[in-house]
Amino acid sequence: MTTLLMDVLMSYTMRWIYEHRIIYVRLYETLTTEELALYGKDLAALLNAAPEPPVHILLDDTDLKQFPRHVTDFRPIMGLMRHPKIGWLVAYGNPNPLAHYVSQIVSKVARLRYKRVDSKREALKFLAHITNLDYTTLMSAAR
Image 1: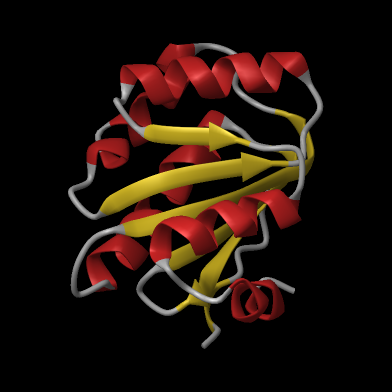
Image 2: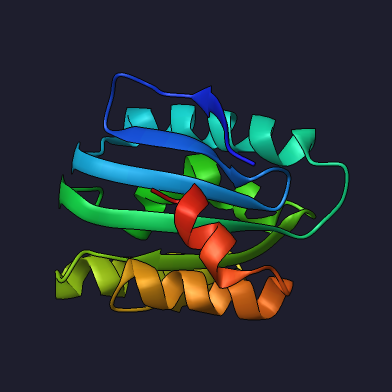
């Protein structure tokens, strides 16, 4: 089941790809620290709407060009990364080594279960495995 909840005219979009279980987030162009705070509020709304944990996040940063480079820039969302309903954050897309490094540091500081894979297909296979959901269903929902 796919429900579009938010489609922000900024540098991110987010929606359920599997209701109350998996959130798809797409980051693109330039993500500012101000947008991180809004991103956090939007993500919190989705997490709070889920009746029970875990809620996993599928993060597509393929088209992300610029992003905050310091761990302190992520303060607005650090508390959210410890939200009791968050399961895994599975990221794919951006080949930038700095993006990988910043993601790893932020996830370690926030004690977030984080996995970076090479492709959307690999990310969905991992999510299908940990949720016992059908891979084909997830692939269709994530289009």
